[in-house]
Image (tube, rainbow over the protein chains, first blue to last red):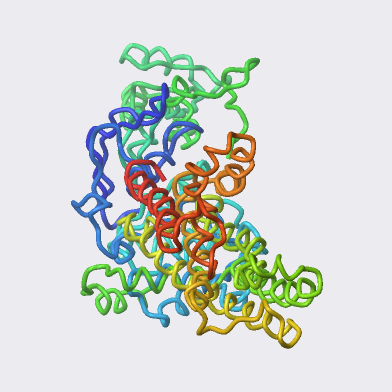
Length: 311
Length: 272
């Protein structure tokens, strides 16, 4: 369980995190979404006590991170890939972290095995690929077998096999009752992996909800109805307060009236339906809709295109 | 993943994070990077090598009167002029290496008690530097004696006045200098900047003093870091204005203590 209340962080003139309150519950994968510069990484550093909040509080299992003793047993974090000394081997990197929290060597061997780095454990981590660096970071997060896991962009640099591995791992960790908090800019990945979402833009909370509610709430969801008598149906639907967009001769996109009501109206009027379905917006559409006003970095020509990923 | 669950119950009831655990962690970190091995190897080689070279070369070059005013231990420890750079750089890198690579965030996530981390780093580094510095200081002394021709007036024994203290002093000086580097590294956090400030502090004051009036050289001169510190590895000083060995070393360690104290003060106040 991670809980932020009124969390704010100012760097000079920039308010990176602005009065952010959210809860990350146990037993679920909670995705953390937001455009570049929205304050995701800052928030994660605040959770881990690496940066001090300007105001507000954030606690892990009810305690501020800096008050934790042997925190690796409670919280595991992957902040940035390859935040390791390149001259040190993977084993020694993990072992030095393990020693500081009294974690036995056998556990280091075990996580190395688990992330698939055992064969290169004695090699200098400076020669690791980005994907291997991510695996090493994940191994470090798992060291103390913690109940809370925080991952900043964990699939960065992983090959498809690695992405699948991470997805399975995160879901399994959540299924064991752990709190899993994950940021990613890969919307499709988030849609598959996360159960819940926290969306921020310009440091402020935009949405905090389940994936299903998030997707169904947007402008992008509509009812698609096909009928040979589309004109007649359109008039009936408009009379009931629906907004109808004519897509083709026999196809209507309806908002404001749900599929069940459309079917009922059609039956009453004796209009035969060829197709009736609900289309949800994609995570990407919803995300663009909600964060459209809060994207800090855009190209000048086309305001709808966010600038290239700065990471 | 089900394999994780039993491990959690086994390991969750541990006592408080102790300094001892952090010391073990920091000692492994120090040992497990190649830069430690190489800087210390260079330091040992320059101490012992230059000790032998200075014995072999100086015996024939110096006049009898020059030998009378020279200090045998200081000549034997000529390598310190080189090895101090290695010790200083290593002291800086112990902490700036973590900031440079981002490792500091993993370290402070594992041990949020930041002053414990910095204290453990300082203790582990000081112990290592003392051992290597003292051994190489004795190595340099004996290499110098062995390289001198039999009966040369520069020869001394460890029983002579001040000699044992001065040879141990070589190790003390190197360890304290490294600690000054570590303190500056904790304050400045960037390798290049901290190394520049460290050696600026050591090498620039003597140059500035040389340009100032003589009265300055005798009043301020003895207190600048290197002049104060090096008295500890001089057996018998022939400089009238110089501080006594332990007084000088005391002043030198105050510089280190100040830098480290500032580092300890700042580490809890800054974002990592």
